[in-house]
Image 1 (tube, rainbow, N blue to C red):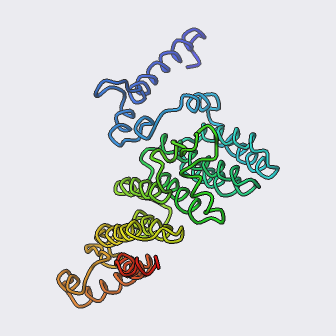
Image 2 (cartoon, rainbow, N blue to C red):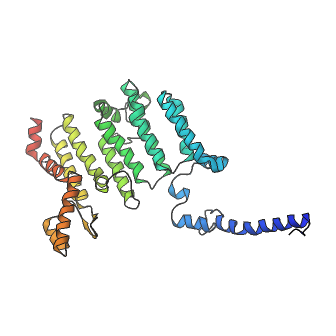
Image 3 (tube, helix red, strand yellow):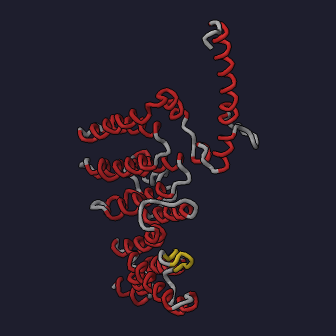
Length: 346
């Protein structure tokens, strides 16, 4: 090598660069719209549904920021998180929102970014305002922020569930629930002209029914992708619980008679026929499943040994305790009776 001239060395280095570029191009060539296009990495991403277009909508600004920052994305994100917390502490909501937008451009597929900031807007920021209409506005902003996150992460069960939690729990069970439940159907913002905000409540229905739809969507996604929010039993119970909360809220609102009775009947059906028939794997017996409506006869039929039978009984009881299954089953059954509905009305 030392005997080569300067020009020969340059030609050799150039040749080596060209040789090294060949596998890089073959591996990293981006895919286009045609079937089977792209390099090996693009094909692997497509087969595993890991391409950005498979995960959700592509934000061109996020890709541009990644190119500009190159390897400094993690550092930039940490600085922005600190700035966002600072703006929240000094109650500079405009700057906090702008900083949040910068964070999600850097980490559009990091679910915790969306969950944390959606929760922050709906629960923390909303509590800083005195006017109930302002509080409701920021609760909605939290839900809308999570919906935007779901657009960019279409396969995430957590984000859809979080939207349902805001529509159900935050609006229906907060201290301001009397007003929030009304605002959800008749928004105080003049631009909606006495109707609901279509971005969160397109049909203008009760908040718990909207929450139920979001929970159903989240459970559908959860079938193919594991969620990390809570015990799977409670996660799968969410749609039925939303229906139970809806029926209970009607009673608290003073709505009695057939409307409320039918709501309880639907809740009983959702709880026993849908959630009650959901199969869950027994941790102690990985080859067996259990369900909430499982009877002793079912257990005896499935179990092959006395030990398996005892284990199944123990786990059915434990899973029912986790979700308060027996209580809500009995409550919905009794509330759906005509005599109970009449007693409430009287």
